[in-house]
Length: 511
Image (cartoon, rainbow, N blue to C red; front, top):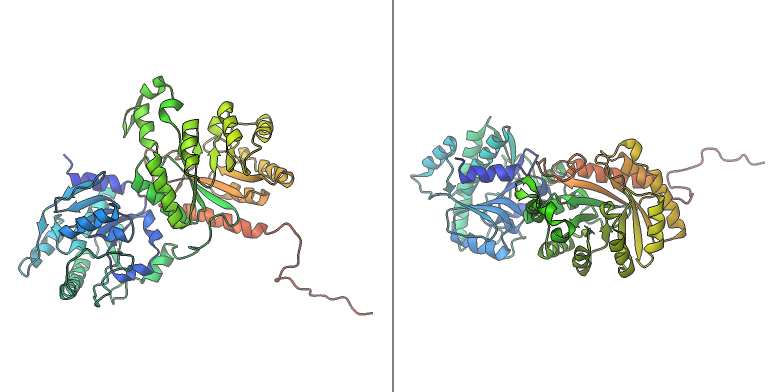
């Protein structure tokens, strides 16, 4: 039978497609690192490093850490500890703690070389052991970045400035001793791991550091465009659908990764499962990790009001907009009450005219409406019906997944752009169900002011629209956003003017 730690590692490692692992400490150098770079990789936190950035697995043995992470609201997906800590809705794996003494230091390195997993006093040794198991699970080498492990202590500067409160009871002399000892064991670990399945790279200013915090930011595309306001220029929407699988930590990672890649908005979906589907549909057999019926599957994927409030708070913190597709009246009422930037009515319910008309008659904010599986008659009905909303974003879409190039019909975006000239409420847009960025860039040239792309987090068996969804654990979504921004620059403005880069070479000869 598989042991709990192996099952945990297998489950979490499967979330990410990258071969990158971060081991996160709390040293002050971490303040120089854009925290968004952690979103696309597995993160192992030491002690309460989750106070700096969300982590997948936290490793600790001191009792004060349990108090600290509880105060922080449990931001790790799982905890590996020797304490009796309990955490609501979090996995807790207990391992034996091996206290360090002068006599036992050799035994710790012996355990390390043998791959024996325990909670060591030198916590990054345990974290590296976990990383080795991830490499074994994935069947390929992993690159491990050691972040926030500065191995030095100056009084008052032991921790990242992002740590709001220090729960540790250690005095300055104890900290100096620990940090000095850690550096010794780290160099030993580097020696042991030379040529192994782990390529360990220290991030910092030590002689053995592989790169600086600035270089790490550059390597992962962090530190750029952090302050670009959402909604400037063409709005880029990361369509999360239900690829969070109802897992709040996965949801958080997707939101952070989308923001890191440059999205202006994230979009979710909401339906009232018990009224949207028939009893027969819900009771039908359906194989999934979440149960044996279709109802089990759909209920797991749905976010509740608390989840959406969590999304709203996080997006406000990140300077990111959010909204949701609503497929029925209960879902519309729930989402509208939270006052998102807009609400979306997807192509899926284009035949639900009573519901659509009810929204049109009561909602005065911005409505985003996808037009997949519809024709000119539907457009006429929409323009006659949606007269109260502040703005009406018409998203050209084809509901085939993937959409063939010849079915993208970007010319429809140009048509919506022409409509916007006579009705300023109309905003042209494009919902991409095709591969890549080309159609979306052409949509920008045709006048789109909003483009939407499906995203997922890693290659999993249950990603929605997996064939066209862009993996947030790779650079692909950032590449998509970058191409949209380049298209914006190339399109420029409609009014003809002389640019600063132009100059006359030949002037008329005076008479």
